[in-house]
Image (tube, rainbow, N blue to C red):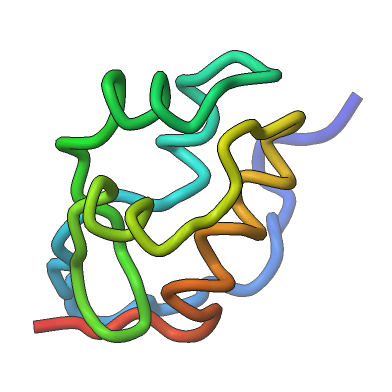
Length: 93
């Protein structure tokens, strides 16, 4: 049993909170069930704004550039979207 007075490790300062528009792609993907047709994804989540390296983008706009019509898994969906928007640090305000 651990003492409540034990040191829990170093404290890391996170700095000021910087707002980021949109939501993570992983959050959108987690709300869906798999497999899924791309048209159904657009119906359900097309209005969602996702975070991308070039700033927030509406998912339906991104999906217009995806040529696949059927997605078998969450990982495939994330890869297809990241192929369009890129994978990197997200811009902040």
